[in-house]
Image (cartoon, rainbow, N blue to C red; front, side, top):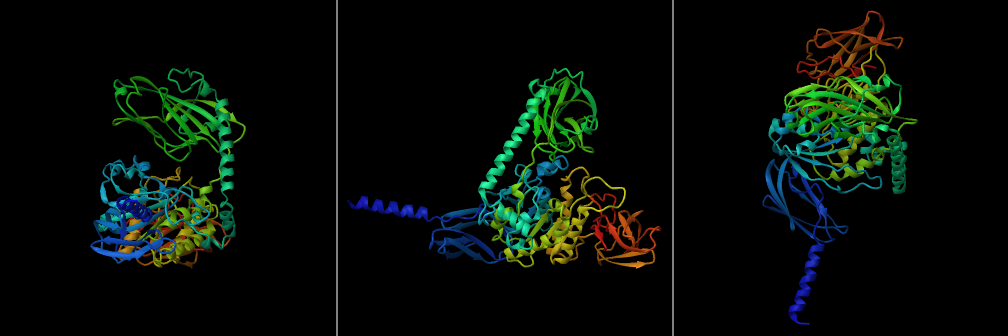
Length: 635
C-alpha cells in the first residue's frame, strides 16, 4: 500500500470518528434562545464518553469532558441582560442569543389558547406584534408514562412578529408584552401546556405518593399495548358511529348544501337557540339554511363569517361551497370567505351540525354575522332547519390518555428543569373541579416539587384563579368552581412567593375559554412586577384576613394595603350563614377599611361567603385600582 493511500485511509477514519464524536444539544439550547440573567447558567448536552467540550461565549472559554454515560454540562457565571450574542460549542455555532428573564407558562387550555383565537377582540395586537426581544419556545404536546424524558421531541425559539404571534399563548404573550414594557428586559417564554389536563398530569410519581389512585393509573398506562388497543377500539367505534350517521342522513346523498335546494318544507327556528327545544332531545345531525341578499360587487370581495359557537361539530357552506368546519364544541366558528364565493343577489348559508351527546345548540350571547368590508350583516333570527338523522345512541366516548397522571410531567416538563428561569405562570384548574377539595394539596405539592427540580427554593409561582363561567344562580348554592377558587386562594396565602391573579370579572358565562386574555396577562404581570421588582406595587384586590361577629352583623377585615376599597353604590356578591347552616344573600357596605355584612332575617350569623358561585358576575368588591377581591369563605 503506498503512503498516499495509507494517509487517505487514516484521514477517512479520523473524519468518521470526528463525525461520530459530534456533540448533541437539547432543543432548548439553540439559535435565538433567551438565557436567564443574574443567575448561574448551565449549558448541557450529550457526546461520546470522554469527549472534550469547549464553549466560547462573550470572549470567555469554558471546558469540560463528557462522563462515562456521555452526559456533559458547563456552568456559566451570572450575566447581565443584553444581546444578541453568539456561542460556539465545539463545532456548533448558536446565534442570536439574548440574556433576559425566562418564564415557564403552563396549565391547560386557557393557557394554551393562542393569539389567533383572540383576533376578533384584538386585531391590531396581531398586526402590530413585532418585538425581537420577546421570544417563545412552544413545547411539543406529548405524554410519556414510562420515564421522565431528558429532551424534547421538537420546538424552536421564535421571535415575535405578525406571522409567529398567531400561535403564541395569548395569556403568555400579553404577560410578556407587559413585562417588556415595564423594564425593557428581553423576555423568553417556555410555553408548556395542554388543553383539558388536570394538575396530576404535571406531577411526577414521587409527588403523587399520597394519591394511590393516581399512581395506579399512571402505572396502568405504561403499557403500549393498552394504549394501542384503547385508541384502536375507540377509533373503530367512533368511525362506525359517524359512518352510520352519514348513511342515515339523506342530506349527505341529496346534497342539502347545494345552492338551488328546495327547502320549502323545512321548519323554522331562531338562532341562537336549540333545535332540541322544538323537536326532542336526540343525538345525530341537523341542517340549517339562511338566505341573504347582497348588493352588486359582492363577488369581488372577501368576507368573514362568524357563527359564534355551536354544540358540537359543524360543516359550513356558502352557495354550495364548503367554507370551513370545526370538529368539536369549543372553538369559535370563524371562517374567512375568499372572493368569488359570495355573489350579487341571493346567497345561501348552509350548516350541517353533528351533535354526539348532550344538548345541541347555537350558543346564546355569541356573535353571528357576515362581514364584508366594514358592513356587518346580522345572522341572528330566523333560519330554516331540517333534521338529518336521529341516532339510537350517543357517540362513543373517548379515553383522554394524554391527561393521565405523570404523562405530561415526564414529556413536557422534565426536559425544561435544567434551564434556569425567573418564575412560573400557572393557568389550570378547570379539569380538577370534580374533586376540588384535594386541589390545594396537589398544587402546593407540585409547586414545592418544581422548585426542588429547578433547584430554586423560592421560585416565584403566579396562579390564575378560575374565571366566572356558567349560568348565574338566583340563590346561594354550593359550587365546585367556587371551592376550587378557594383552594387556589389558600395556596397563594400559604405557599411563600406565590401570587394570585383574580379573573372572576373577565370570564364569559357561555364559554369556558373567555377571550379577554389581555387583562389576565396584565394581572399576572402586576403580580410578577410586585414579587420580582417592586414590593410597593399594588397587585391584589382586597385580600380577606379575618372576621368578627357583632350582634347580627359580621365585620370583615382585609390585609393591610389591599383595603383601599373602590366605592360602589351597593356591594354585591355576599352571602351570610345563620346558625341553621343556611346561606342567604346579604347586605354589605364598607366602613373605613372594613366590610360590614348582614341580613335582617338572620339574627345569629356564623359565616360569610363572597362571590361563592360558578359565575359570580355581580360580585363587585374591588380596590381603587379596579382589581377584584378573590372569592372567599370565612368558615
